[in-house]
View (spheres, helix red, strand yellow):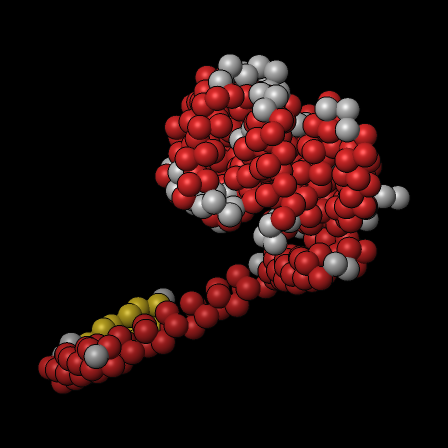
Amino acid sequence: MRFIIWLAILAISAFIAAWLFANNHGHVTMYWNQYRIDLAMNLFMALSLFGFFVIFQFYKILSMFIELPLRAKNYRLKQIEIKALQELKNATEHLFAGRYAKSLKSAQMTMSFKDTSQVGYMVAAQASHQLKQYEERDDYLSKIIHPDSQTTKFILTAQMLLDERKASEALDTLNQLQKSGARQFLVQALAMRAHQILLQWPQMLRIANSLTKRNYLPPALGKARVFEALTQWVASGRISRDELQKQWTEFGEELYRDASWVKLFAQGFLIAGDSPMSKQILDHALDKAPEENLLILYPQCSSHPLSTTSKVSLILKLEGWLKKEPAHPSLHLALGEVCQQEQLWGKALYSLQQVLDSTRSSKKMLLIAHMGMMRIYETLEDSERNALHQKEALRLFPKLYKMD
């Protein structure tokens, strides 16, 4: 289409020029002292165009010679820029390939060019960090002064400080980013790692929850981070009942069906002194199906020092579940432990013996049953049977817990 348009313009121009030259009968007379020059108008116009072209080319050549030093300078700068970009490419490739010394060498060549100097300092700082050259690394970081590069500088600094386990300094650096309005997921992930190193479990849990809900962390990884933070927080004994209740209500029904989460919250409420809530959580889960990990915890609802739960209510609940599954060893084990707490020796011995006789009992369950019967016979002053179960417990113990 463009070709057709230019062809049309050329044809029209040719037609107009031919018409003008064919119908132009004028002439031009020029006087110079005693000389007189007569020219046809068409010849005068042709000579004028030719003269203009010659003068234009003359000034163009003259301008080229005048600008030659500047053009040479720009050429040299262009070559330096091309070389700097090539070296920056090499430095980045070497860095990702783990060739840190070569990466540092290539990055140093990019620092002399303004457009690549800031990125060169970043690559050099990362390479120096990997080479454990921390003074050189800090020197390169201090040279990153461009306003547009400050966010990258702070993130790099925080990552490097976390690698050195300097979590407090990393958090200070990240706080500077957050004060400036930066809310990137990467900044929050780095903050989560810093809180993890500092054992600040509430802060880690809050960030892990946020990143998981926003789909920054994969579901499995996000769940693992949340579970780790909550587990450590519960184990520290510094979580309050209200805070634990808040976390329990925030989790969805899917986690309520997960035995590991149910056990974690049940333990948490026991530590917080709310044994009725712990029992309620376990009852809700165990009503659906007996779970060994939960049934091992169930007797603690009455044995925990801060417990206010009646042992009789636990016995009645366990007997109700046994009517549905009379051969389940975990139910017998839990019932035996609760009866032992209530000093119902005959009922406790019967339940623990059911655990020993069951083919479904794990080694851990067998060990707990032998130790329970050992304590009962010790209370009943039956030294012979006490020694028998003590011997069996000692036989099982090394199989479960490796000794150095």
